[in-house]
Image: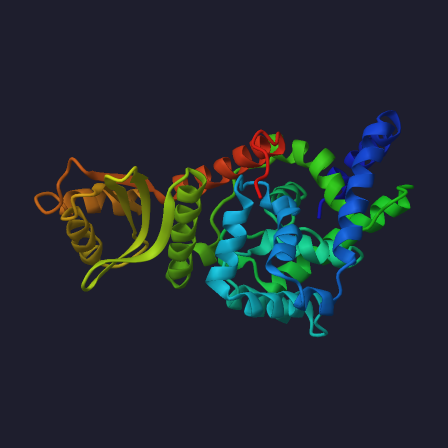
Length: 356
């Protein structure tokens, strides 16, 4: 970690806390309120919560700000995982006695729909002396501080990496304490990064280069899954019914589908296939089969620039060119991040009242 970059930002942060004391006090009270709410739960209370309690539990998280209709997300979590299964794994993650590395990895593998940002936020509320919120903002700040090995893809958010990130955050916590901060737990570190360090990082952070691991073919399957997951989230944020691994006909399963109902007339469907390596024959065949469905408005091939050029060339005369679209994989990741930011900002305005 580059301490010479960190020290002046801490000094500025502590100075501004004094000059803007009312604002900082309000934010401190909000964090304390959130912490008190989640610490009011025990393992037993979590395991015995009802579905309506679970909505309250999940909907208050910062990581849920991207979703306008939080009830839809909560219902989907319960449907995809089973409520009992979901509660058991949450309890094991938050209150288990095994090392955080193992609890983290087991949860990620067992539970669908709750990722590192939500997991780490809950851990931070439950034990703010040990755990930091681990999201894109944390990575941006740590990269600015020249901390190597920050993840780019979801498969790199491992329990081991989370433990490393918490250890680094603990160092920042200790520096806040030594410089006279009145609060220095991991919630305070997160607030410091969000309010003070992130603006520096977003302006000055260099473009991140691909690591050798990411270039290696062994990581391609995980990157393929990452892009597929992001396509589903983008579709949901845009208001589509969005799914992955959809069977369009016998022997043909496509990576992602966006569907929009048009009154009682039918559906408009958009089909996505992601290509990360190997032969493109199955991609072309699946998109050709998808085009046979009259409701399909467009088929989209997602890959890097080199693969897309190959797909365009080899699909001529096989796929109807008028309905074929191409989308670079890196653009998918950028669009996802931008949409998440936009929805977080808009949903903070609370323009739409909560329903029953």
